[in-house]
Structure formats: structure tokens, C-alpha cells
Image 1 (tube, rainbow, N blue to C red):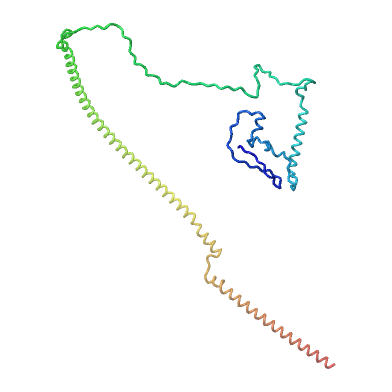
Image 2 (image 1 turned 90 degrees about the vertical axis):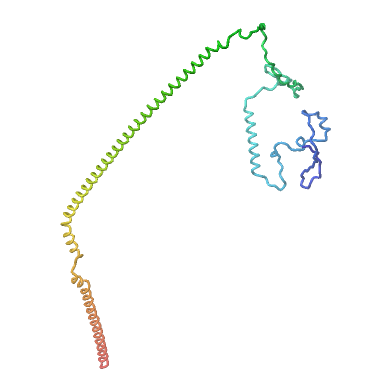
Length: 334
């Protein structure tokens, strides 16, 4: 971003403001220009402006007038000072490096590698150009024609000089006819053999079907015998089970009769002793008559007691009244 910084009037709070107009970016050279040329330029980048603060801004100790000191900031500063002192002490305790040069001399850096190289601030540069040839398609491969060898010779053959067709074709025809007849005989023999094979296959199939039917009949008969045997065994087991259950029932009934023969009299006698079997008249007398009789007797006794109590109270009142009269008479006579 290029800009021309313009100073404006500072505000009352002491802040610095600037404004800039947008301008196109100019091409910068790869290397720095001399200091005289740089000073003559009126355009500059804000990143290279000396008035812009670079680096860490935490080190600036600028506090407002009315602000209070921050304890956390003070602690961080103290810790930074302590770390600096500790680093300084550690450097002092380290063994000394190269001793200082004597008076009149100074240390210089030099290369100790096997191959020396020229050190300079500006690296060497050179421009090299190259041009490739135009790309051409591969031409078609020519047709291969072998080289000619030998000599050309011509001759003339008249009709009938080499062979007679009627005579030469006779063995060929004999071979063809014989081969055809032999092939026909072979086919007839093959057909007869195939017919006999089919007849044998039919006979074998009929025999096999008869044997399979007999085997199926025997298997069915065996299956029926086996099912009949299993059914008879099952019936016999059921009969034995029923007989066993009958015997067990008879034994249980005999045991129950024998056990209950003496149980019933004992139960009846025990229930009678405990009062479960009773005479209705005696039970009526015990539950209804005797309680009524006791209530009547108690009420009669209660009435007698009340009458006696009332009589005693009357007698006491009369006696006390006469005694009072007697006392009064005796006092009046005296």
C-alpha cells in the first residue's frame, strides 16, 4: 500500500492522525537504491515509514494521566528484569570464548573451508537464453521391398505335354469312390450297432424298472411290517401301563382303607371332646337359659342392694333427726 502521509492538526488529546489518497503501486527494484535516490522520492510505503512503530509495543511505558498503575503489568516487568539479570549472570558464569585482541590488532572473520567462495552482498546474476527447434512429425516408414536375386527364365508348355486328364484322374476317382463306399458301409454298420444298442438299452430299462418296482414293493411291505410291529409294541406298552396303574390304584385304595379304618373313630372322638359334636338341648341351656338366669339373679341382687341402701339412709336420717331433737329438748330444759 503506497501513500503520502499528510500531517494534520493535533487534537486536544495529543493523538496523531493521517490521511492518504489511493495511488497505484509502483514497481520496486529488486535491490535497494542509494540513499541519495531514496531521499529524493516523494512516495513511500507505510511499512518502511520511520514514523510507524515496528516490533513489540508492550515495551512502551505510556500510561494516561488519570490511569492507576496496573499491578499485573508491574509484576510482569519485575519478572522480565529478574530474567534479564539471571541471563546476565549465566553469561558471566560461562567460560570465556575467544580472548580479546591485543592492542593494535583486531579480530577478523575468515573462511576455513576447503573450497573458498567470494562473499558479497549482491549475488552474481546472468541471463541465458535458449531456443528449441520446431517439432516435426515422424515421416511414414517406406514399404520394404527385398532385393531381387537370380535370373528370370521363361518356357512354353503346349496342351497335352505334361499330363493326360482322363488318365490322371482315374486313380483319383477310384480313391474317391472307394472312400465313399467305405464311408457308406461304416455308416450302415454304425446304424445297425446303434439300433442293437437301443434294443439292449430298452431291455435293460425294462428289467431295471421291474427290479425297481419289486424293490419298492418289498420296501413298502417292510414299512408296513415295521409300522405294524411298532403299533403292536405301543399297544402292549399301553396295556402294561394300564395294568401297572390299576395295580397301583388297588394298592393305594387298600392302603387308604387300612389307614382310614382307625382314623375316623379317632377323629370323631377328638371332635366330640373338643365340642364340635353337642346336644342341641344342652347347648341351648348353656348358651341362652343360663346367661338369662344369671342376668336375672344379678338384677335381683342389685335391686335388694339398692333397697337396703335406701333403708339405711332413711334410718340414719331419722336417728340423726331424733338426736337433734333430743339435744334441743335437753338444752331447753336446762
